[in-house]
Structure formats: structure tokens, C-alpha cells
Image 1 (cartoon, rainbow, N blue to C red):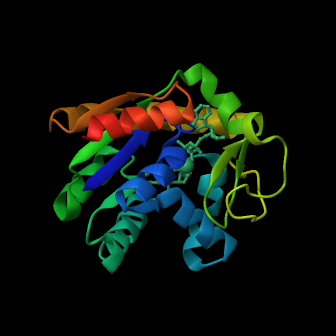
Image 2: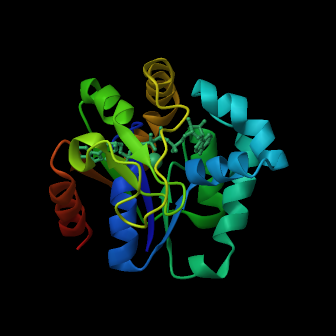
Length: 206
Ligand code: AP5
Ligand code: MG
């Protein structure tokens, strides 16, 4: 099974990816998590993309596509993958079609007016890549899943969220039409509870 999770920033891609990966035994690949890991470790790649990510713009296509191609060639992707945050524009989608076209594209639809609250209340765990919200876990400092230290992402502020949403609308939203033309899109109402979103995805994948 080769699945792409598509949706605006804060639509719940990361939250659902963890649950889908566990249920179907898929490898969860989040380009955002890979970039953040590189920034944390101050690698050459991390240095290249840090300012771009802090501003909410997209990292360069050549670097991003190369990274995903390399990641998908690893053994743990032999049985399929779950891509979260890639592709993000038509160029990246065209490249992916050349080396590992998806079977299904899950499109998480949320009211864009609710995104800022979701993102500004988010707490992220760099250790297990969990994504949580203070409305559900309270303003705690440790990850409820693995006990790691929770952080607030540098790009999770109202100004950067505005830029990320604008990038999404201009560059990423056209992918819905691109994959609809291929008959691969599954629309999911992302404005339900986390568990109900997950149940809708499982039902749709049957
Ligand atoms: P990335 O890390 O992919 O961020 P994003 O797309 O902006 O998405 P988020 O991670 O913010 O949101 P999410 O949909 O995962 O939501 P989550 O589940 O956490 O990318 C970051 C940056 O990296 C980009 O800006 C770019 O610079 C770079 N980048 C990455 N990929 C790239 C690419 N392919 N090309 C170029 N550049 C790239 O949920 C959000 C919050 O809502 C959480 O607090 C969660 O608890 C809560 N929540 C989730 N579901 C629900 C629900 N059903 N009800 C209520 N609350 C919910
Ligand atoms: Mg995410």
C-alpha cells in the first residue's frame, strides 16, 4: 500500500499518520520531521533549510525529491509507505510518479479558520514525532506517548502559519485535482474528533 496524506498545515496529517502506520504496518515518512531532525543535528541539509522553514516557505524541490527518493529506496519501504508532507507541489508529484506512484491519496479537509488554534496549541515530540494539543493533554512538558520532552515548533506562530496556509493554497491544493484526475483521492472530513477521522480513513481504505 502506497499512501499519501494530503491536507493543509494543521489538518491532522501527522496525528493520523501515526495511527495509520501502526494499523497497516506502513513506514511513516514525514519530510517535515526529516528536515527538523537535520536542523536539530546541524547537518549541511539542516543549515540549508532552516531559514526557509522558519519563514514557512517550501524547501527546494531538488533537495526534497532526492531525500524522498533515497528514503523510499530503504528496506522498510518495500511493503509500502505513508507519505506525510510530500509531495507539496505539482513538480514533486510528477517526480514521485516517476519512481513510486501512490495507490491512494487521503485528502484531509478542515475548516481553514480552525487551523491557527490547532497549530498554536500544538506540542510536538521530537523523539517519537508525536503531535498533541494542549486542549487534550493540558500544558504538560513530557510526551504522553514516549516521555520525551515536548517542544513548540519554531514555525508554529500566527505569522508563519499565515504564510504556510498561503503556500498550501497556491502550491499544494492543486494536487487534489492532479490526483482526482488519476482517480486516487479519498476525501476525509478532518473536522471530526481524532478517533472519528481515523475510523473514516479505515472505512474508506477497505
Ligand atoms: P510539515 O512538518 O509537513 O508541516 P505542515 O504541512 O505545515 O503540517 P503540520 O505538521 O503543521 O500539521 P499536520 O497536518 O501534521 O497536523 P498535526 O497532526 O500535527 O512541514 C513543515 C515545513 O517543512 C514546511 O513549511 C516546509 O518548509 C518544509 N517541508 C516539508 N515538506 C516539504 C516538501 N515536500 N517540500 C518542501 N518543503 C517541505 O495536528 C495539528 C494540531 O491539531 C495538533 O496539535 C493536533 O493535536 C491537533 N489535531 C489533530 N487532529 C485533530 C482533530 N481531529 N481535532 C482537533 N485537533 C486535532
Ligand atoms: Mg505534521
